[in-house]
Structure formats: C-alpha cells, structure tokens
Length: 628
Image 1 (cartoon, rainbow, N blue to C red):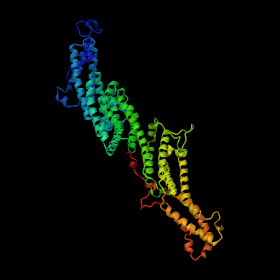
Image 2 (image 1 turned 90 degrees about the vertical axis):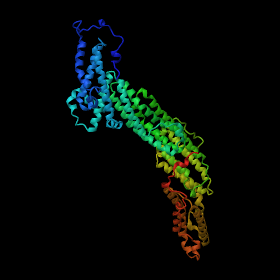
Image 3 (image 1 turned 120 degrees about the horizontal axis):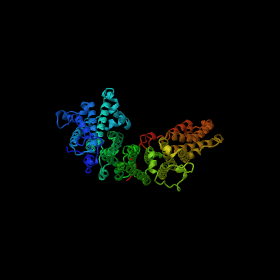
Image 4 (image 1 turned 180 degrees about the vertical axis):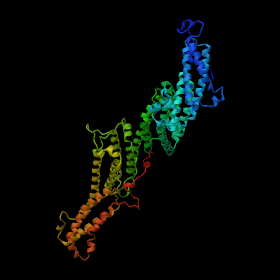
C-alpha cells in the first residue's frame, strides 16, 4: 500500500522553524519535548497491538477477523488507533518529520490496512443481514441509530459483552452496522475516507444493482418501446409497478438508512456515498414511465396503465423526496416529476382520443329489440373504471380547459355551475363524455323504422348509463342531481315508447265507463278491434327487450295498468251478454288473465338469438373502443 501521510496535516510545506515553536514543557534544550515523550509512550503502547493484527506479517492476522474473533479487543484496537492519531496531531506542530512521526505513520498505515480488511469482510460476510429489506423492515433510521450505538457505549461495557438477550438476526445485523460505523469513523477521522468509501461503494452498489436487476428493471430505448406490442408492454408496466414499490420502500430506503448510520459523522460523505450507490438505478427506474408516454400511441385502452403508473409515482413521491433529500439528488426528483408530467399528457390525449372514437363511430347497425348498444357498454365500462382514478384525474385535468357546454341542452349535461356549488373539472369532463355518448345514441336511435322502438332503445341505453353510474364511483363524480335528472329522462323515453307502441290498443277500449256500451253489436265490434290491435301490438312488441329488471317491471306495470285494467272492466261488464254468442271464441279471444299473461311475457331477452344481454352479463371489453 502506498504511504499515507497525515494528508495535508502531516506534510504541510509551511513548517515553522524550531525557534518559532517554543514548548512550555521542554525541560532542557537537548532532552525530548513533552510531546515527544508522549509520542514515545504512545508508540510503545500501540505498536504491539497494531502489529499483532498486521495482515501482511502473520498468518494469524491474515486469516482471522479481528471483529469476529474478539469484540473487546476490536474495540481496544479502534481506541489504540484513535490514541495514535491524537498523539500524531500533538507532535506534528513541533516536529512533523521526526523519526517518531515516521514510525507513527507506518503504524497508522498498518492499522488502516487492518481496518480496510475488516470493513470489507463485514460488508461481504453480512450481505444477507445487511440487505436493504432487512434494514428497512427492522426499524427506522432513528431506532437503528439508537440500538446500534448502544454496542459501543463506553458506559455499558459489561452489558455489551453479553449478546444472548438479543434475537440472533437482529444481533448480527445490529452488531455489523455498529462495527461498520466504528471503522468508518476511525478511518475518516484518520484521513482515510477515500479508501473506506471505495470499499463501501463497490459492495453496496453491487447489492443495489443486483436488486434492480432482480426486479426486472432495465433501460429501454425509445425504439424498443415503440416497437413493443401492447401485451408485452402491459407485462412490463405491471412489473414496473411492483419494482417501484419494492425499490422505494425497501431497496433505496434500506440503503439510505444504512448509509446514514454508517457515515453519520459526515453529511457530505454519506450524501456522496448514497448517491454513488443508488443514482443510476433510480434514474433508470423512474425514466420508464416517461419513455412509455413519449413512445406509445395514445389510445383509450392504454389509459389505465398510464394512470396506474401516475398513481404509483404520486403515492411514492413523498418517500422519494425523503430518501433522495440531498441537493445532488435533484436529477432523480426531477425525473420523477417529468414522468408524472408526461403521463398526465398521455392521459389527456387518450381521453381526447376516447371522445373522438365515439364521435367517429359510423356504424348503422341496430341492436335487436332496442337493446343495449355495444358502444354504451364499452363507453360506460371505460368511464366507470376511469372513475376509480378520480383523485389522480382531478390533478391531471386541473390545467386542461373544460368542454364548452353553452350550445348543449341543460337536461343532457345534468348539472349547472353556480357560485355556491361549482362543478369540479372531472365532473365536467365525465358529464361531457357521457353527453357525447348520448348524442351518438340519439343518432343511432333514428335507424329504427319503428319510432316506438327508437324510444325503447334510448330508454334501455340511458338506463344502462345511469345504473352503471350509480353502481360505480361515477355517482360521486356526477352527483345525485345528475342521476335524478337522467332518471327523469328515462321515464320520458319509456312513456313515449308506451304511447307509440300501445296507445292504439288502449284506444279500442271505451273509457272512462266500459259499461256504457249498450248494444251487442257495439260490444262485439269493440272486442274485434281490441283483438286485432292487441295481436298487432303484441307481435311487434314481443321482439322488444328490456335487460334491466327494474325498468322492465316499470314498463310492464305501466302498460298493464292501462290495458289490463280497462280490458278486465270491459270484459266483466259484458261477459254475460257475450255468453249468448254462438261463436264466442271468435269474438272474445282473450280472457283478462290471457292478456295479463301475454303482457307479463314481454321484454325478456331471447337467449338463443343472442340479441341482447342482461346488465349483469354485459361485460364487453373496452377493446372495441380502440382508435384506428
């Protein structure tokens, strides 16, 4: 090993002449000074202790660990080096180039060789006990500092000899940390910080790099991200989410705790040491979301993975700021913020694309029986999942302008802004996107030749929208007022359907007094008209479906109340009169119970035809909302 001086302290070129350095303790001009006498005694005391553990002179010292062999002797060795250093500082002011100083320097170099060896052995042999997970989960920075310091408290010598009362794992880990700190402080104070840090950085960086590798984190080029298919990229994102959590909570946190403790004596050293160990891995980890956002096509089906990454960084940002609190860590924190900004841009662009996909849907395909359109299912599935990210969406949409709603009907938008209760940005955006969907459904409703079926289609689809909103976090975003206004709209659609689909049946029955018809001929004519109108209506409406149980029951109850009640009253009023009719079955084709049974069978989906689906089974993937 090259000779180590007391650095600038020991070999300063500005050495004062002997005459300018009087000693109050000199007793004769020819005798040794007091400092020289102290140094002689110190050298005589420390030399046998230091040379005993010189790894270059004895086999015993070369193969034996001082700190593992005898903890009390190890502590004495550190004290010996400290005493030697103090004596050297005392002597350097009088005679820095004396033989005593050279002898002391040689002993110091021997001691440092020993401590470097011990430092390396402790770090290497205790990798399992000093891994970041063990350090981070065992305790906080404060408690580790407290417990480990106790091992070298000079006032508790007898207690420290007995370690059996501490659990084995914590005992080994805590003692190893205390040993590392003791050696680091000794080497740093003796002017050997560079040698100490070199050993620490090499071993600990290899542990961090290995941890990053095992987490599946790697540097991705822009072209590689751009060429990667979505399924493979989704797997990478899922892996990254797990890696971020583990790296921040365990890997980097554990390293910060260990580094803070071992190099507690110097803020600048622990800063440079920690950054050397973690900077590369942290930057690679935190750059992935930015790379994804910049090199992946913005489309609706990818928005949720972008939000997952945005949420993960947002949630861990306080920990990132705490762990990387050093001024030299500004690049790491900037990378985290840059990734957040790029992900937010991605989400906003994907939302715009989602709106565009709905607007550009030009399919003229109609759903059988006025059932639920696939666009409704896909869009509401998308929005209901999106609502689960409402907290993050609020932040993302905060800076984006709200959609203009002046030319739009108030009943569609569902809520109004007031000074007392202003709608949030995310409420505006969600209501706007649903409005875009409803407007598109209005267009598709016109493709039905039967107007009554158009209204049933609108009722079914709006019911699906409202139910989906009520059973998801959309209800908190849109609010009760929005939901109630759209429920009123559903009733209006259903009422229009009933009027257009069944009013001609109702009009065949006399009202308000069915018994007022007084001639058999008129009675027979009413029965015949009812039979014809009911047959036609039932045939046409039997293909209609209402997937939602509540809406189906409401429509059937409303239709039944108007038709069944009037027909039953008319039937009961003229049953005896018609009983005399020879061809009764041809005239009175339906008993009231028959009408009731026919009405109760309406609006159920035909499973075999696959024309529609119930709300509970509508789980179409959002893949149909892909942009092209």
